[in-house]
Amino acid sequence: MATEAVTDAHGGESALQFHPMDQFIVKPLFGDGAVHWYTITNATFWMALTVLAIVLLLVMGTSKRATIPSRTQSVAELAYGFVYKMIEDVTGKDGIKYFPYIMTLFMFIVFANFLGLLPLAFTTTSHIAVTAVLAFAVFFAVTILGFVKNGAHFLELFWVKSAPLALRPILAIIELISYFVRPVSHSVRLAGNMMAGHAVIKVFAGFAAIAAIAPLSVVAVTAMYGLEVLVAFIQAYVFTILTCVYLKDALHPAH
Amino acid sequence: MATETVGENAQGFADATGVAGDHGASGAGMPQLDFAHFPNQIFWLVVTLIVIYLVLSRVALPRIGAVLAQRAGTISNDIAAAEDLKRKASEAEDAYEKALADARVEAGRIAAEAKAEIQAELDAAIAKADEQIAAKSAESEKAIADIRAGAVESVRVVAKDAAAEIVTALGFSADQGTIDAAVDNRVKG
Image (cartoon, rainbow over all chains, first blue to last red; front, side, top):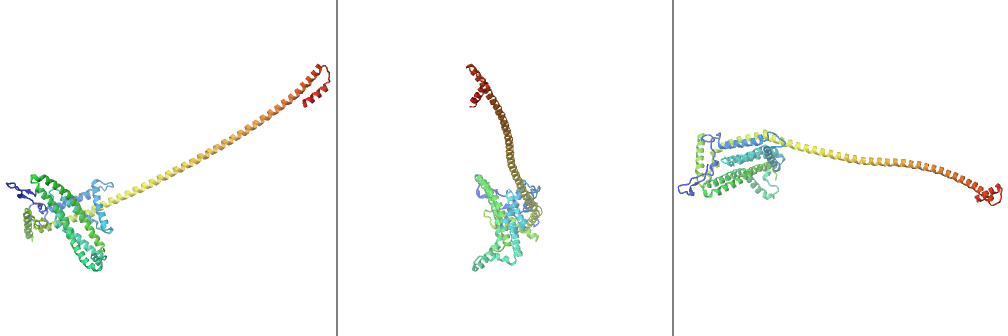
């Protein structure tokens, strides 16, 4: 729909038009007015769908509280165990009390990514505005937590005790820079992955308008879609596990 | 302020659609970098995250945690029960083995007792039979002795008679006393 091939009278390829980025435009869901902060947009709609999907899986799916779980309940328990074990392994036992927050992040990202793979969907996590809020929320939460829990000792994170004394100031600068780059890489990684894959699929789909290469284009779209399914999960996983790593640094700053 | 936002917004739309039409879409054409839409997305994202957090922390996670704990409890209880049953089974087996061994010992004892009893009865019967045999043979011996004594006397009488007859037949006469003495003498010798 967003992509269309306008062939001119000579059927020239040059008139082939791609709109691979149109799928990312935020627009009001009802009417055609301006987008205010409170306007219900397609972003609102797809975020609401993630909430709905999470409620369906984790609340409706487990409503029977069965000792022998149904299929849906198994998936819900799997998701619970997956994130729980991740925190336990990466952050340690004292990270468990932040489990609901990390689970919220993981469930939102994984469902936003997968819902974005539906045809004609709007991928909320492909927007830097969304991922930056997530990443900066993690960054500020972890930094404040680090100072609250460890006080000035939190700065030991930047003072590498295992390195020779002469190297430590240089390492401190590098550590400091890498620390402040974290939210940027954290957010751009997710948004970039989601955007790139979706845009590439759209470009391939645009080529399907030319009959000669349409089969190839369909194969390419299918292959890319398979890759994107993988990426959708892996990026959610990566975002969550990095959050756990940052949380570990905040709780145990010493190297 | 509001009108300004609207203006930027319209500009953003124009940028997005306009540049996306080109092949070389530059960064400015990315809808992601249209800052006019940021407040909207951020607002709804925060709402979404709060809703998800409330749903997870109030309902979903405690419930799933409880289900998992309950399952772990059930499983460990079942394993404990199974171990208990296994222990009982092995106890029962031991008891059975012991009963079997006792029964074997008892059977051996009863057999030995019966054997001894039978042996005693047999010995008594043999002794009684021996006694009877001894009595019978003594009786028989006495009878034989009587018969023998009777026979010797008869021989003697017959010999005396025969001797007297022979002496008479030979034409001699001899008195009975002499003949008796001679016969006795001979029979003795």
